[in-house]
Image 1 (cartoon, rainbow over the protein chains, first blue to last red):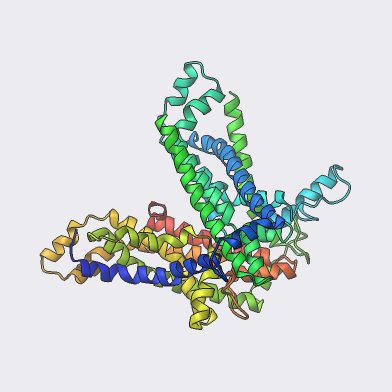
Image 2: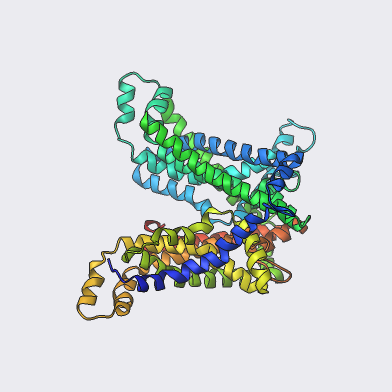
Amino acid sequence: MFHNRAEAMALALPAAVFAAAVFLLPVILLLAEGFKSAEGWSAAAYTGFFSEPINQTVFWRTLRLGAIVTVVSAVIGYAAAFAIVNLKPGTKGRMIGLVILPLMISPVARTYAWIVILGRTGIVNQALQGLGLTDGPLRILFTETAVFIGLLQLFLPLMIISLISALENMPRDAVPAARVLGANWFQVFWKVILPLTKEGVVIGGTLVFTGSLTAYITPAILGGSKVLMLETLLYQQVSVANDFVSASVIALILIVMSFAANLLLKRVATARNNR
Amino acid sequence: MIQRLFAPFALFLVIGFLIGPFLIIVAASFSAGETLAFPPQGFSLRWIAKVFTVESFRDSFATSMMLAIGGTFCALVLGIPAAYAMSRYKLPLSETVRTIVSAPVIVPGIIVGLALLRYFVVPFGIGITPALFLAHTALVLPYAVRVVSASLANLRSDIEEAAVLLGSSRLGAFFRVVLPNIRGGILSAFILGFVTSFNQVPVSLFLSGPGVRTLPIDMIAYMEIVFDPSVAALSSLLAFMSIGIVFLAERFLGFSRYV
């Protein structure tokens, strides 16, 4: 530890000044824009925003999709992580590699793949018609289902990775002990695995939820203008309507929701701890 | 018993869900047909070859490369001293600096891009390319600081104190003792920053302008107009590039220790 304050400031200041000028200050100014009105400060833009039915729809859709993606990824994530943790070391490493692999591929490429799969002449529609289950092609693309599938595939690896490290830190004999004492699989999960891995699921859940809220590419490509989410609505407000006040309102909503998700999940974790 | 059968099957489905779409894209990029389809119609390399002849792809690839390499380099130049100051000095504002520097990760990219455009780029009359450069530097800075901090935390501070006691200057000690020891961390930060910046869309969305686009944004624009397999071909090429880089990094650096 050195104590020369001037020297330390000289080292840390350029980065801090850069981040403040290029990022922090502009974002604060943008957020302030939503509270400005002709006669001083007001929250009129916010009441105005939420009085529009389309904005309400988009707001609830974004929250709903974020929540569903988080819950489903937790359920699938537990199954996958549990299976991976119980593998032999060599196979385990390869499986973790396969889970991480998609994270290195551009989200544009990953989302694009779903057009090939879910499109009018895509694999799913070919299969459904081939089996005689539907007469014409189903419209899957540009629905909430498509956005859900895209988001799930995008963020599931983060949940699995979080859960793998949580499960690995769990005492080895906790599950066999509970089984020997007569717990069924549901009880084992609810009373043993979940409490012992809740930090992992909280971390994974926060990553998946905030990721889904703030994803742009997936709703833009798979949802289009039919399934707007807050991010794509923001883009539309600026590029089509030139409406920076609405953009500022959406920006603050997104930031507040991300922070709230973090806080809420932390609270859940500590509440369970204290019980 | 049920678990023994169920677990591998569930895992197989999950891995299929995660990897399958990527394999389909790779298969589709070898198609001989005119439109994007799976199963691919015949086999050819024409779409792979076409990628290299599309002028906008070449331009935006160069832009993205420049932003990813240059932006990450600048982020490291800013980030390494900051990380060093926070780990080695008793800095009263340490936490504040850390919060400011890492804030771009918490705020959604599209907001970062819009705010930068409206309150920095337009008021100061900055061109499209420099604006993108600033945005990508700010975007990578949190990763640079975090990864370098982690590798500094693993390095005992008494070796540089020893160097100073033995007559080296602080600066000399940093360049001759500290820097060689955190080389792996810096390279890892560079790779993480490069991949993050290269794949980034939302931040660049509002900042891209006529003639200057990043590659992912160019791909989105292209796929909205043309429905041929060239975007699939380009996606596969880029994916193999990223996987190759990360694979080499893991092999030679133990990349995952730092990230």
